[in-house]
Image (tube, rainbow, N blue to C red; front, top):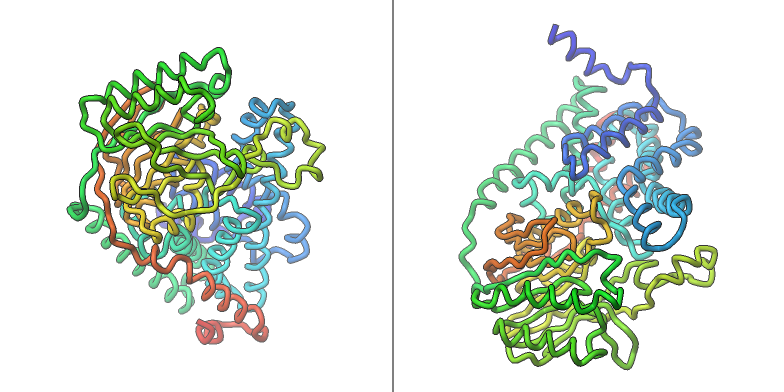
Length: 518
């Protein structure tokens, strides 16, 4: 009986289902693979299903119908954006839904190009053309995170990173390297179902298992290494959990500041080196109200710590969303200006062209973009500060570490997304940055996940998500740079060259020609 069931599973490509039905099923599987459900193995199945049925689908049909289903796939990742922009952008839900679908359509273009490109490779090389999938997916995932500002929120690599041992491979090739590994697993599964007896299928699957085995073993031992190098720093972090609709309401200013004071001063006896408050933690702009500024100075002095807090501030060039640093004496010693702003939240791209969404345009801030990714210095130690979703951009954090950052500090305001999967997804993205760059992370979030994460992505100290809290922990300042930090995503150029070579060679079938390309 078991043998019969296995036989049916392995002949899945003969089921009465087409590529587009498989795409719809893949969207459901992908949705369930994402946190908070986090059944990460389903992410592999989500990509395997459509690829299994792709070879029997006409190219013309893919061109006309696939964008509909790739939009549905992406919407399963980003549906939570609609209620957020409806509530805080003061627009009808149907318009917010339409805008989220528009974003999903754009992001779905990269997935469409993946399946369209894979169909071309399958036509040229037969089933062996599936071997191009890891290369093509990784390049397109990188482009999605880079073009037009990029939005690299959650891809296959992040699903792979949910395994603590495989996560450690990010120190070599970053998140896109994990995406490559994930797609190798997908292709091996496809070969098992479609052509498990062919030599090239066996070769590819064996290679995948070998890489997976060594990655797992390496990650197992590396993640258990005790981190001994580097000076220790005592850190505190505040999670005030201020509702988003109260943060900038003048009638709540004193209450918010009192809450921040009480939480901060509860750590007075912990002998902190750094105390971190979240993004926009002050209810007024720094430098705007002397009374509120003095309260922050008091916190720095009374806790005898270097205070890092998120705030809005102004200089001769404009207004910035960023962070200000006060030393133990309460003197301002540095600031950080956010370099990667949120479209329609912190600035409006093409605001004249997009005047038809005037409610969002009018409610958006007009912040200036910061220019420097150099770390700030606190008592001679170099700290890389990021604001909110800047951490989803691997290269941004990599540049900070390459420029000398010994510790990462992230200030976030995730109160916008309370009750959605975005809170946990954002945090899990952040911990990958720790492993990529071998750096500790102190994360202070309003309404999100606040924690200390070590170089291996392990949580060492955390606060409860639902309750206002003040927590503390210990970090190590690390100067060593990983292979990924030094070289970045260099392999994207190599992958692109192989794809171009594979695309322009003569139309051939069989494995020998494909092996010559590799």
